[in-house]
Length: 172
Image 1: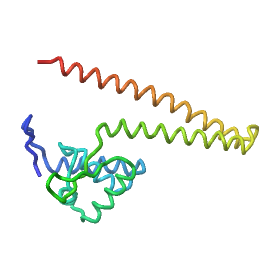
Image 2: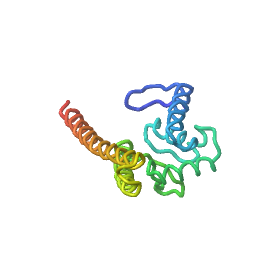
Image 3: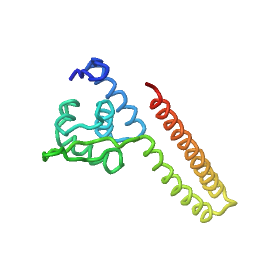
Image 4: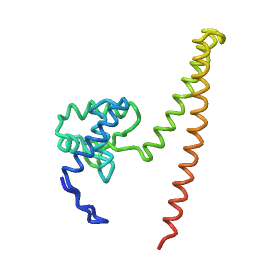
């Protein structure tokens, strides 16, 4: 599937793209993502449109439609992809969300809030003077710190993206 990209007329090496997909998927698996979900996610990332059908994914990854279905179900549950119908067709396409990494990190902030609250409750239950209570309290403080830093970092990213878009709009 060597792609001739309309704008730049770049020709891609299918084997190199496949190796990249598998390498990135392996990185995602090592970080805790389901293996097939990681492969499908990586395949969507390398597609120019950010959207592929089940048949396209199965062909590209050399996997069964059932494997695609399970991977998509997982990716939809963790809010990394959306299902959409092709106009005039019964076929579904699976699309990456816009700003998928930004949105994923924003959801991490919600997870950190929940974990911080749980650890603060745990520190009370364990007793603030006990080693376990102190560990739980320190963990809660770490999660609180991470939330502040994550929010600040996401705000800087948003500002950077807006500045980049504004700079791009000014060019002839």
